[in-house]
Amino acid sequence: MTTIHRTAEFAQTAELAPAFLKRWCSALQERRTRAKLRAALHALSDRHLRDIGIARGEIEYLTLNGTDERIDPRRH
Image (cartoon, rainbow, N blue to C red; front, side):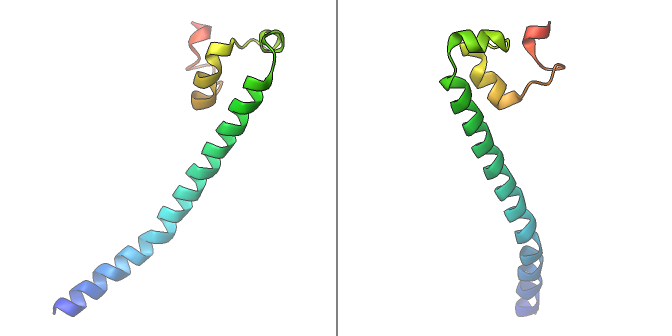
């Protein structure tokens, strides 16, 4: 009975593994994209940042939260 129970647990775990890997890969890709955006924004001059409406101190916030106007504190 124990062997059957453990086999069922393994089968259930094996079914969850692909979903976990997919979420993990997606999170890793998103993190890399944010890192590239952060680097690109930090590479811009203060003048260029002002031209697009971003202060240097807002780069971290924007790369983590995006530019969704509903959550952008600059819009309030």
